[in-house]
Length: 377
Image 1 (cartoon, one colour):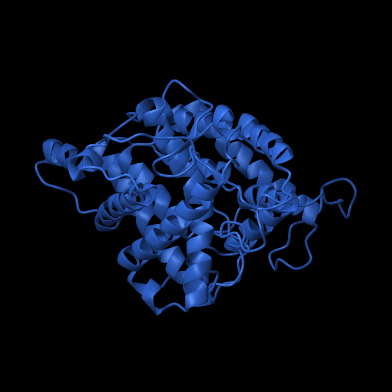
Image 2 (image 1 turned 45 degrees about the horizontal axis):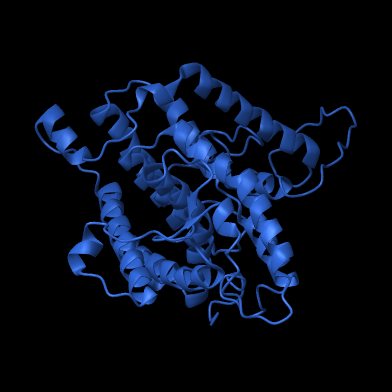
């Protein structure tokens, strides 16, 4: 392990760090602070003039200046990414990266983590699809299921609650298969990691797959693996709500407003970046081990850091070996900004809390209780 003296410095506080967050060299402490600060009212500067010194110990710095320093670094990274124009260099789809590698160099460059992630993601998709179709109660021929010959109806409230259970079960299976250390974590730790991942993954996967299924309708996203959400669908989303004295009309308007403002934004973000298959798999690993304010043991944090670094190393190999790119720092910065764009856990939790107050979610509704203990029934 490298000594602290040989490590690069965090661009925000100057502390030694090997971490990269949002595509820039910043430590985990500053990243956790920044994510929390984004959700709070604006801080006041201690020196009034926004020129406080950001210290290395992380204990006495002005919060306003620390936040603005982080913002400045991110904005600089975004500007560099736009100037380099990396998106135009990345093909919109690379469906068979293994074949591309063999054609280019005669032999496959080993990328075990990303390749395994691709396999696990396909298993997750199959499990979600099969479970959701079986839950409909309409029997389909197996060949119709595997070839995609089934309807994609609008999502409903009950549908969301049920399919979310399938998603969480699949995510836990994925984590067991993809990260061997996961099995040694406590049940509470496994649940925390899985729920945090699910909240980000759901929106990213929904918009990513909607680009393929509904390329001409930017107002649609997937509400489950086999159902969609849109403004029109929101009109009937709560039709299967069975809770007495619920304010369904008001809940519809809240949902429509969320769809109207959020879905096009998510779709545009995915479309502008144009992830290829390898990048998408790398995104899944980075999202699973994404730094946030969740209390985790130090050794779990170190496990996550190792997987993030390994995923980035294999992704860089993809850029240099498969795509023959000499400069890809801006592209990696784009991916981290996309992750930040889909980090809407607080926003989604607030929506669910409004639905509970309006009576369309009960206290024991599964999706509403995701943040409770791991023994959530």
